[in-house]
Image (cartoon, rainbow, N blue to C red; front, side, top):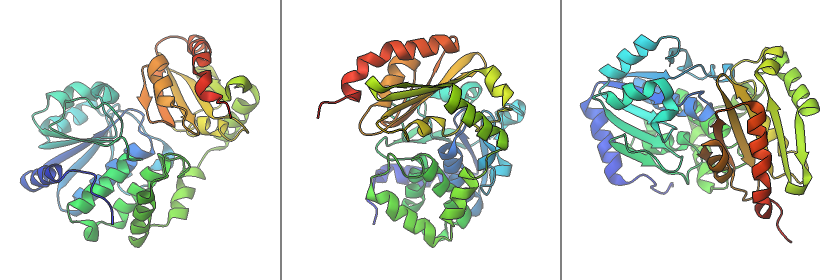
Length: 344
């Protein structure tokens, strides 16, 4: 049995919203990852199966390797269809805000969501949530928002009617937000949930293949280039860094999601406990940080890159050039030496 993480009064509030309203919109963060899409489609499929009117709106495109998930074809990309996205949000009775803790994470959708008359429910596992939602289900100790969606459905008494489609989406989110259950995944409850999802008929091996064995030749050539030409190792800090410019990404015809997993690769190097990937984007620089042991990537991300996240996995951004972002990282790294190189 799972312990009851979500308080009873919040379960009752959400149950009332589901019973008393007709139109539901699910919104998740910019550049949606596996947990964003997995949690959104886990909830979306559940609502559709209950006969409710539901939509998923994302600020921009999501990776190709997530488009196999049931319901993915129905996701609305607000970057392509801004007017329709605004209309859906403004006409919603209830808006579920999944896998983000601050409104700026949904960029152009933020003013529409904040200004909407709908009741708003945040379900998230990032620390320090904003207060723009009426109900805030925030549990940073939980490995993924998808896990919270599973717990919510169970607490609503609907595990028996949860479909395979919802289960596949939830498992995908849990898997991707733990690096295939290689970090933030020591809680035994995770594996109890996996067992329950298997009872729904999911094929976890096929899901792994759908996500991780679904890359283009160009992506592998870019990965080889990154490791050969763009990797810097800082052995005195047990750290490694890779970077990519926009020009380099264009050279390898990079598509959304092609750099997924790049920072994790660095942790495969012997003695490396901190890996960082710094990628130039349009008008800003994106930063992804991963670690092993107890090195706080979220603290580093907050200090340098206006970011945050979890102990072993976090992200941020930098408004400046790629070289300036790298220089800031290298300047700050020595401050963390005591956490990276501990006396035995």
